[in-house]
Image (tube, rainbow, N blue to C red; front, side):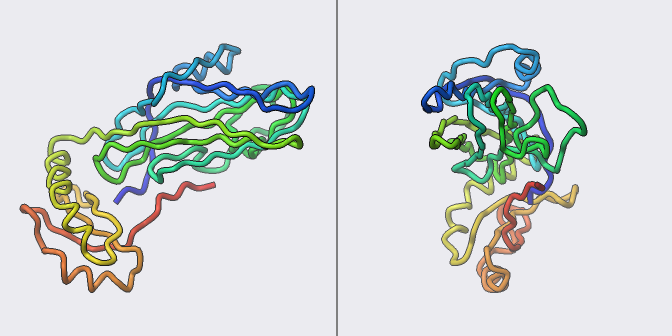
Length: 243
């Protein structure tokens, strides 16, 4: 089961829009890949999006980077920022609290303690997007950036695609998992069918359930082995990032 994130690099895309408010100026929202973030922090521009952005292929039990969303408040009002995603395997934000003591004159992550989703006029922040897959399936999401001010709210959408890159032994197990996923998912109370390689010498097919009380019932219906791979039944664990 996938529990610990790490980070890599990616591709680029951006969107820019105006937060409408009388004489309030604009709120620019954009996107850069990880390489472009340093240029943006130094005053460089974001780029215009060209559809769906591909995240760096994720290794098994690891996250990959999808780049960074950029928010600049050029209006005359303070704004608050929040993010939403349509797929649990994609996330925004930092994994752990972070802040800088004293005056700050450079953009920080929007989720940093110094910012906490709040931008005064003239300030900017950025937020990293990551992909953390449970399986080797290709996944897609729409991430929304919601900006609110005293004049109202507006939302901008960014589309991302996540793929996985497994070593040969995991790829072989993934192909078995995919062949049997549909039949296992038909068992009542099954939440997902994943791979587990917590034991470095053995890859297991992990059938998860939402309620711990259903584990024994599901275990009786799951074959002990599938194409040579041992199976297990465990409780589903949501992806959780520390705030």
